[in-house]
Length: 269
Image (tube, rainbow, N blue to C red; front, side, top):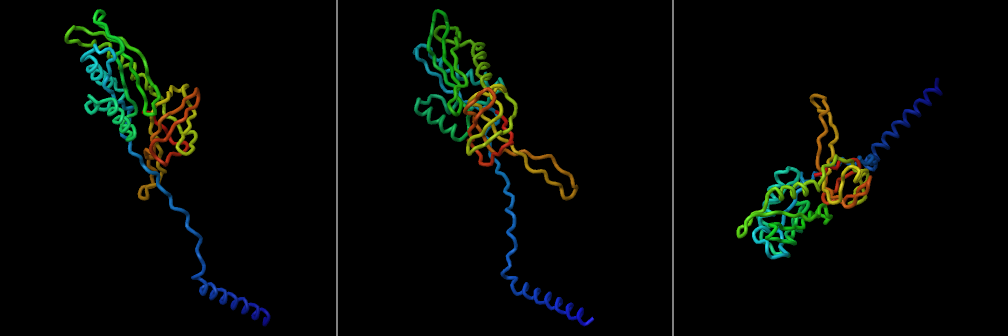
């Protein structure tokens, strides 16, 4: 009985001493570092959700087209806008610019992500007898990929005051609009610095020069009052332009956003 009491007393004194040591050294005991707080992904503003083009003044190599070279871009702008496939940058700030000024203006719009491409045209042949003009038209993307390049013959009527045949311009506008195909949303398959990879290419209609914005979805959080889980909220975390396309892969370049991750969704304009 005495041995048990003596042993119990020693254990009791040990626990008291250990407790006092803990209290005395408490200022030196550091709690484990807290886990890093969750950093919310950053939202990126997008200037336009359709592929937006600027239509430049056309040039006249023949020197004979007169006002036709001025009216064709205006009619073309209207036609493309009505097609509903592309968005248009307003023509007024682009009228009458010298070549150098036009280039600087376009470059500024590209850098600010205001436009995704630019349409230019040149009259290469003019015939009063046949009442036709031949123009070479190009659509260049923001990364200078040639998305459309072709030669078109347009007819006109009148002699002194010439008027272009609008149906011909409509056909031209439709051809340009089709140069920016509609393709399905795609998941980001890989990312390395400012380069992203897609697991699809021309087999899904992709062409170099296309632009898209990247969507991510916020984590689902239970509503503390109702306990319901709301639908995930999409947010835009970046913008991408496609630089290279093969049959079943594509490589894009990030032009806005630092929070793009693998499995985010790329939605093309």
